Length: 323
View 1 (cartoon, rainbow, N blue to C red):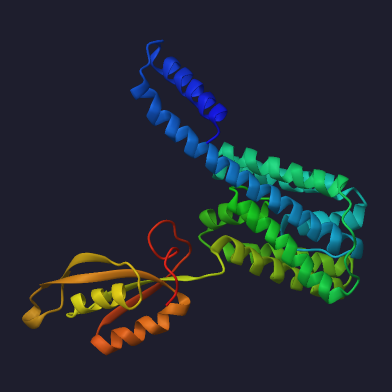
View 2 (tube, rainbow, N blue to C red):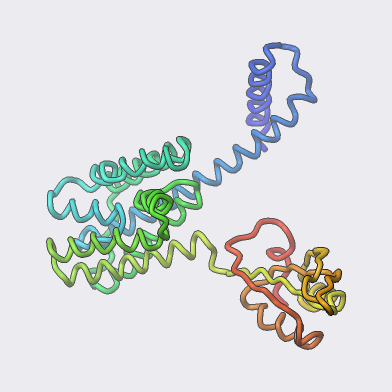
């Protein structure tokens, strides 16, 4: 890290400790752990704001390069803003803030004030970009507008979410209502967007509403790719009498790590339980077929449980090449 920033963090850490313990005699041993924490917080904050900046410029490109010049709408708070812009002719930059503001206030209660502040900063930055930056109009082809407008808008929403904020507040409302009404977030979002698209069909045209649905689908799929990752991981739990052979196979043939859990079988001869090791490993979707083949070679009766893993950090899976 830059020497100036390191010295600044040391000063900040010392000031915090002096205020906490009400003393000026703070040792280096006390300062070092807090400095390390501050370094981690700073590096993560920089990365998150880079994601937000990229997301805002991408969403601005989707709006001004595709949707706005052709009077297209989208789902969510952005779709409401675009719809109101078509009806009232109020500048979209103002509407983005006005429409999202109630959702951000709700976010401060549902999540945290920090999340709400970061989101309102991201939305205000998006409004600034939409108002002041002139993006070129890319195409007038309606299908391309719907698909690529949705793609760049979804990329922006997804990158902002990776940065710990939202530029479309309806997801906050969906999470809040899902907790209150015991329904899924997806169902709430679907209901909100059905209302928006129905209103769009009434105010604008059915054709515009249909293209808006296509835009929304493109944006939603892009958000999934950005947030969850293009490469899908699968967590695999294997229960087998030949657990040692399976462990060696995973390490040597798949070049993957695994974790061994000490388990206890509940369904044994005469109802007696018995000890057995349980293997847990994570592979990519592309490696799953090979893993299943190798397991069948060793034990065709192995009990296998598979589940989707959204993302990973650390370990071997992102460092080792696919073989």
